[in-house]
Length: 466
Ligand SMILES: *Cc1c(COP(=O)(O)O)cnc(C)c1O
Image (cartoon, rainbow, N blue to C red; front, side, top):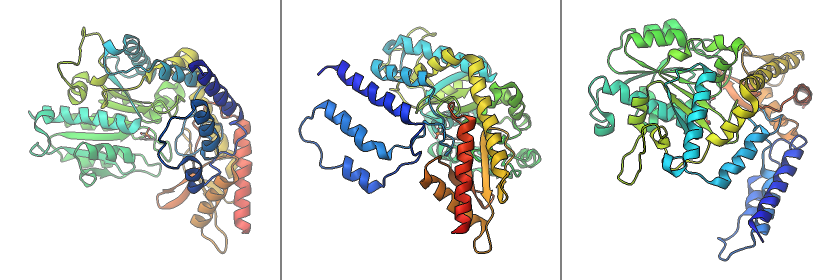
């Protein structure tokens, strides 16, 4: 039994899955107990035939797999994977490269430099910015905010990497009321408490109100970090970044932009106005596994100022080999040391689609989100609560004489998930229950939207009758 046979089997399982994914019930069809019964059991004591192991994994995980790579998964903000990126990701696993240092994989180090340059160019960010390849936006927020913490404290003569935070000058952190939880999570890991973050009111799209922001920071002095957002996880709306940067920089602050998906608006001319001024910020988070449609996990931490980025992340030890200055040390820019070759699928994506193809992919999802909103609201009793400016649609369903709108909306979401044509989650939007729909997949078509609308409206009508 050869490696080739095993890989051929994996190939055939994978191809069958991807061919069928369009037709699958989108959500999981089994409960947790069934999965444990089928997959669990005592710790294996002796070896097994790997072919049997692989076959059993495929058979037993299958009903618990969520077809999030398929065209009608609208949960959270979830990208699919452009086929060449899946193929390239297999090769990344095959080569099994470590991205920590140049000497461990010159090819990967060079690919990371190349992809970093292309990303900066597409997003119109400063060419000298440093880029770390991380697991996702949460870790990108962590990395960027660590660089911010370093720099604002360095400016007042405090080396936080050497002396820590406990006796450091106080750092003021400001974020919009709708800052993503992962920004708060990142701050927590950096030694800042969630309640220390000064929150700024937002408008009905979840965007920071600029005047309120300016008022908030007017009286502040000392080290200041501002967390802005491109692409609200509910509405898709973006903070007034240009104005926030001007005001924050006047006070010597550092502006970090969480643009897990929204940053890619900068790459598309007709959407770029929404994130005007982002190039003037100090650091940026974005995901590749959302709107760029590469496989999990893949995020980018981008910092305009490489020195604080490296100061916050870099490590030194006698056996860690730093080569010539131009030889990339991947671990200088990310919180991990050993790290998989995330640049390979990204490189394949940029080569295959090019700028035009990536713009087209983003544009298409925005057009489809508008179609989704239009078609849903042609039904009486269905409302879209946000301006559909990017790929996000927030839907609310009217109640009836017996049940509130909240109740019916939650009921419709549960029915849609169980029915399986598509999958959408829920959230609370300014205190109201909503269905969250995110169109982020390269393979979604108009027909997928129309089928999904029909299924959602059926669930709504059934919910009203029940
Ligand atoms: C999804 C998202 C995150 C978290 O991203 P992960 O990739 O899950 O770590 C952070 N911020 C925003 C705005 C997001 O949409």
